[in-house]
Length: 282
Image (cartoon, rainbow, N blue to C red):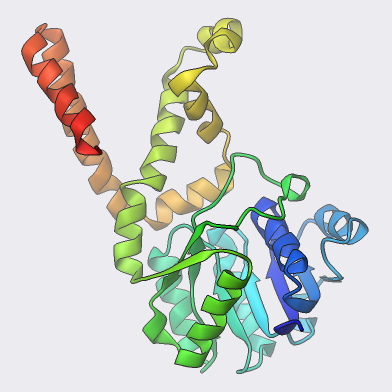
């Protein structure tokens, strides 16, 4: 028997669309409804039975049990303001944003002031591809999903969200939003940022004339990450900027040290640095 009557997905990109497929595969909801500003995405999702209903105006939505925001971070404030005009107190709202920061704090306050339930999530999944046509029904299976600041809602709401993610095969982990953003700035966020910098730094002639010959090993991963959605990653970098700047500062320091070693042909120190790095994750 489905655990939900109606789940609303806001944002039918690759992540939101894949979530719809996971919900349908695991028979978690009688209805899956979706909102997106891209009418083509909504039409595609309906035609391919990824969703049951489309929502063209959030203020006129049917009352879902669960709302999951899968849109760019910069769109959260306007989305939340519309949701709060009509959402019931019994409805739980979550999101899948990679960065929490100021956006998370502001919308958490809006929900708290309205006496409505919001509990943030972050699934550790993704792809450089974007759009409804790249959805996968098992994208969230066996993947970690962070649940943020669980004390901000009732235990019943927390268990409702935890059970939802685990019902589609995810592994949940509780974390506070501050620790989460520090952790992401030192791992996922900086990995994407450095890939953008790496590709930006490549001479255009190399890309035009030699890229097919070079797409192996490390460069392939940099190219893949640099093709991630620009709007999404602009939002993430700015929303987590203080933590990312600290991480960039450490990277710049280590880059300068290695540059100096190479410039002076300091073989002993270079090898020592590389060995220490090699052993760091053993």
